Image (cartoon, rainbow, N blue to C red; front, side, top):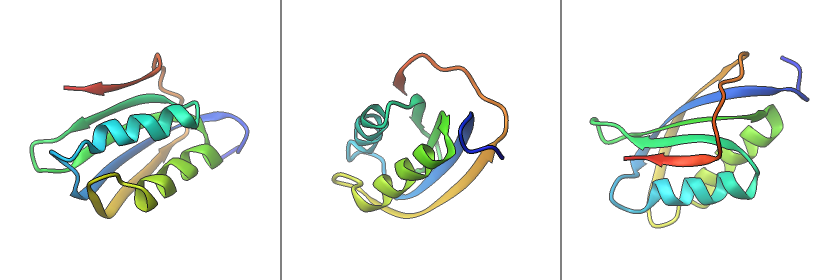
Length: 95
């Protein structure tokens, strides 16, 4: 995987991540890192994150979510990096 080109991160975040403004915190971190993507709650109590950007920047996002989850807490994150770039406009919360 070439580090300077954009790829797509697909992640499912586990922990106390719903009802604690975790999606808004994720959007703030993503915007700070100039990433585009989406974040949404899933029916099982997890949060799904899709974002595209350089690998190192996506890894920084994951680290920020672990270290600074806002009012929530992250127990673990299932992470998948996809070689294709998904197109997103900005970073938005899906309700």
